Length: 145
Image 1 (tube, one colour):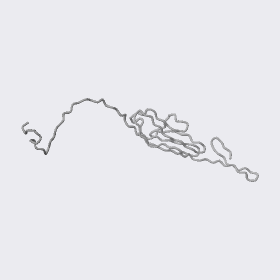
Image 2 (cartoon, helix red, strand yellow):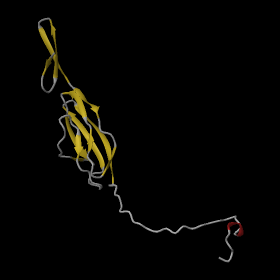
Image 3 (tube, one colour):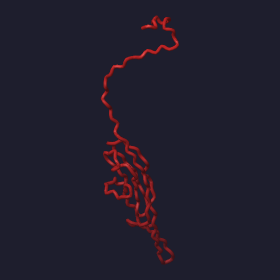
Image 4 (cartoon, one colour):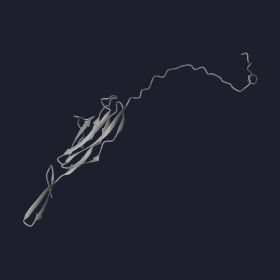
């Protein structure tokens, strides 16, 4: 078998003739993005690793618009310091594309707001004494007081 950078060839010797055929393998995901929930201010990483012949290129899309973000060498996408607004929440789609075809997987990112600790406030609470079903005299309380 001979290998080229963008495809693989399979050759067979048939009498005095060498027959070679080119074969391609459609992109297939080894690791794909999944739905995630992240707190505002945190980072989130979407995995995306695909194989195929030739090796597919990976591109990322957010709500059907292409992202021009850097991905890791294996195709994973990291979104840094996520903000709690429409700018980050939505569909993240990983597309694996080659001469053999295209495949895509989509995940939804939900952004929750930051958790804030509110300043504690001191206050005075007056207890309320409720003594139902007990005669006032048996408790040493006169009904006039």
